[in-house]
Image (cartoon, rainbow, N blue to C red; front, side, top):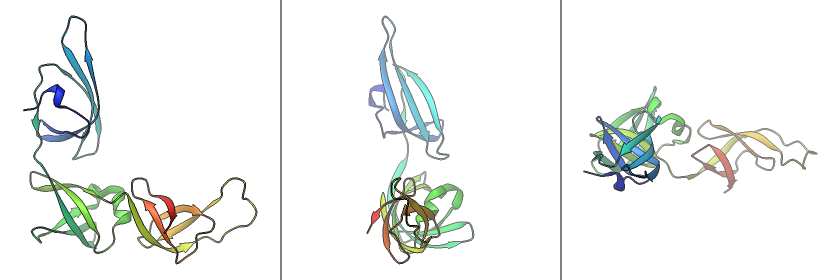
Length: 185
C-alpha cells in the first residue's frame, strides 16, 4: 500500500478499480490539523483529468499496470492490429483508444504499450518521428517577415503546417505529442 508521501508525479494508483496517474501534487501541512495532499489525476482509461484531495492517513493500492512493446501491423476498419513483441500474439485496438496517435502509425512501427488487467489501454509513440511529405502547397514569394508557413500532407494522411521551403518528397521530423513540424530530416 502507498501513503500520501509516496504519491509523486508519474505514480499510477488504483482508485475504485480504475488506474489513475498522478500528474501534479501539492503536499500541505495545516497548522493544528493533519497533512493533506492536493492532486491532479489522469484516468488512464478515458484520459480525463480530475482534482482530488487526500487526508494524511489515506492509503492507495498500486495499479496493475504492465508495460510492453508491440509492432503495428495494419488497419482494419476502425480497428488497428498490433503484435506483441514478446508473445507474438495479435490484438486489435480501437481508434477511440488511440486518438490522435492514429495519424502517426505506419506498418512495422514499434510502439510502447500499456496494459491494465491484461487489456491494452494506451500506446506510447516516440516523441519525434520521421515522415515523407507526399503533398505540399506551392510556396508564395514575398511575405518573409512573419515566418510564413504552408500546408503539407505526410504519408499517413496528416496535414500540418510547414515552412515554405518544404516540398513533396522531403523527409521531415514531426512531434507526435501535438502533430507539429520540427525540422527537415
